[in-house]
Image (tube, rainbow, N blue to C red; front, side):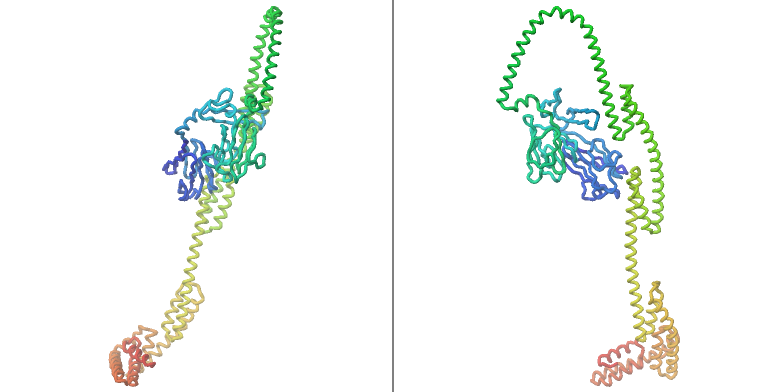
Length: 622
């Protein structure tokens, strides 16, 4: 069987070998689900596929972004040959097709090039047919195949197997299944769809598929007779018949026995009459033999002259044949746009027939067209170069705008460049770079948008937190906790967030600072007056208010250190005495003692102050 060998080469010269047998499929792309994975951002997720059909392999593009090149030429679908180089940037896939086992006999196959020329128009037919395992005799037959079958073929007109010609040996099966003689890759065809037979000089077809129809001349038919040039339609595929006319022997065998006897009788009578007529002519020829001998001697020289004329005629005929072939090839190359090759064929024709006026006129016209084409090519090259320079300048602008995060401008400029890709296929390498930059800019814009969303959410949370702190400041202020209000508003005021609460916090903070300064001084003086009167509990009350606002007031701490310990001792005695009264169920006296603790020791941070306050709460006292 045939084997397809792929040698995958990367830019870093790493190589991978892949082997593919007949009737197998190989998918290629960046995705992990492919048979051959090519890790590159220039390769699409599902880039292309290689399908083996019979003795051939076909490469198909799966609508990839950057396309495929075979031997430097961009293609959408092509049958692969040994030595082809597939470019899927940055990878190169080298194709080698090897023959093993019985397929090696194909090297001995006879290849026939049949050229039928009809007045040098587009009806010229050229076909190549390979017949494995045998040779073609002079009568056109195969060593193993009857002549009437060896020259009858089914030709596939379209699809992956287009151009495939299969000889009709008895019968040919057509379908999507691998066991068919002709395998068509068409989803609208059954696995075994059609049978074509050739017997007794008649070619017939029969549809063996129940669900999918066969059309002949545009009409659905389940069976019928085929002629040379008949076209069968199966799904999206077409098959054309190449049939030779039936031989005399096969035609004679196909007629009825009665007609066959009548023809044989007529032939016998014709042969008997010709025999008697020939016998009379021989008697007359004996009389004129002597006269003829002298006449024949005289005609020897004329015969020699005739032979020489025939030789010259054959030479002239050969020149005409060569001239016709060269002229046909010149017209063909002209239609294909290969003007240089067409001019070479016309020059070869003029070497055979130097005075050929038609060839001279065509050659002069071609030379003018070649000159014009060269001028156009020079202009095209200059235009392509200027376009390349402009695109490279635009790419530099894209890089600069990308640094400034001007994503919209960058994408608009890149889209403008990409629109020129169809007009300038010579710049495919540069457009690959443009596509890569385009994807990078899109990704950068998406990342920037995501970052902006995250930053916006963070800012919203920070604003909510500052507003909550501002509210807590108001709550503390209403509860006469001025130091707490001051602390909360200071946090809001030093924030960098431009919100209305920050402005309000700064305003109230300035007012509160002045108010607290005055209040602190007033309470301090009141406490000092009571201290001088040795009313230490009263002094502690006012100084406690000062310490709430200014915990580090130096004068208060110094004076409180002198009597605070005795106040604490006195409070302890009163608290414990209250516990005693509580133990003997004299709650009224116990509550009175605990209230005296709060009065003698108004410092909320004091342990006995807190305990007395807790006991009063148990009995519903404030």
